[in-house]
Length: 441
Image (tube, rainbow, N blue to C red; front, side, top):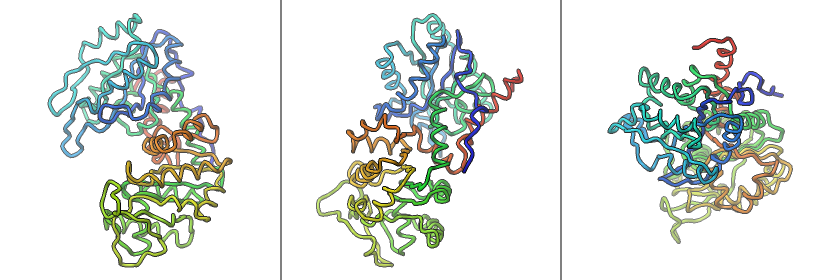
């Protein structure tokens, strides 16, 4: 049995001196798409940390990233309403019945916001005087220093540190080591918030599962999941695949071609196919939905086909869903029903048109009233909520269910086989060592 992480090495908010302090809180409120909040779940999960800070006399400055405003190829940053945190701040104002101020900093064309200007000083004064309830900084990825290197990044980090006395990281979903999640710990006493602590505890139950352990993983690209998928395969008793990942596996195993699956991915998947010849952990979903066109469900343009009927060398159309009767198959139903730990990071079909597979998966998993069920990923959770709203509401407080706020973070931890191995967490641990010695870095 794998050892539980030594949580004593992690600095936690319970031990922070917050009275009269300005507290910079990094959260993962990346729930806005095209200016609209898709699901406030991740916002709501951080409210306990925010309440605790205020109740103990701290004043809050919040920050999160939203979307990907930076073009990876050109480095250009687009700062517009589609990736603004304004809807999040407005939601918190309604939820907490207080004024949340969002500073307006001027952005340079295609370069984002160069830095935090002195107008913030007046707002901080109002925060200290309780004229406002909190400050919510603009999208961290709007600042050119957030993902930069060298002087730009260091300049932004120092500006952030200058705003506060204490740093709290409650952004489990933000595992990338950026200025606002990683570098900031070099300059302020830093602690893990309550959500971060809870996510780590539950993550270790995935890394050290009660068996049988069944995982369901899907994705739009095979190459982005190779690392986590290979590590997850080592841990599970049974593995089910969906989405393009499953299509790629089927191509590699049966010598067929499915529209939209790259040849390079098929070659990469052959390693998994070869490995499973002996171990036989992969449970195939026997019925899939083939479509002549990519996108909407056009009458007469899609059909259910059986995996057993594949013809080697044949090319098939787009496979856009798992037929719901796959989950009535005895082997599939028995595997899901016998699980004692179930991990799901999967949307089985092409949304919003092909959704039967995801709904059938969630309802089949729920029939097992013994297994601990862990769902990871915003898309996975959103699909569950949209397709099974009654079930979703009924299990929010069910001890058998846990919904992670960051699917990518879970997969990263699985790949590393360490709940505390992500760089922002390592930075918190190192910060504790440094400040216990009374040093600065």
